[in-house]
Length: 163
Image (cartoon, rainbow, N blue to C red; front, side, top):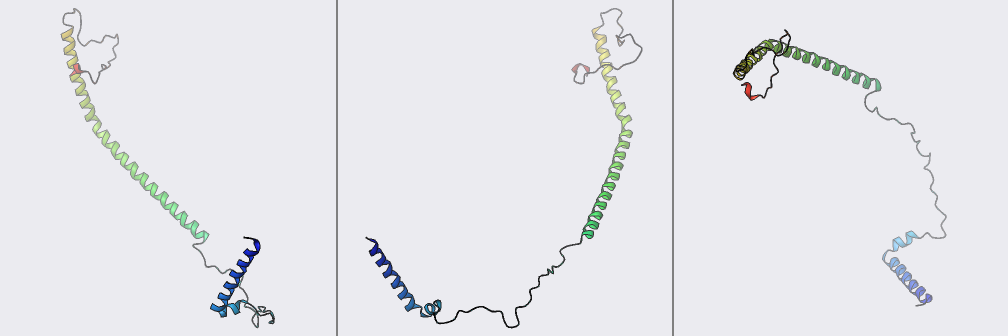
């Protein structure tokens, strides 16, 4: 196909489309095209002019003022410090009560530990006497150190021979 044939096809298509548009929608076709003999229409303001545009911003108050925020947060912080102080007082009172209970129970626990120590010590002395029975001059329970200061024996908590 050469260029002239293409042009002819396009012309035939455009003329058919224009004819179809004019026949189906005559009102739209006449309104879309301005007659050449009419003067141009220019938009003008209404008589008396347009209303003045209010350029000032009248915004409603949004939220509390700065001093109200400061006062509220100060009150919240003071209340928080008050609560911390009350908690510290209660915690100190609780610790004092626990300490008093420990002080009251300490002699009973010490007496029980002393009783267990004496039982282990007597068992060790009996075992020492049994083992060293054939040695002359051996004194059962005498410290091997040359000191008058009393020291408790080192006890192994897991020693099976001490029971």
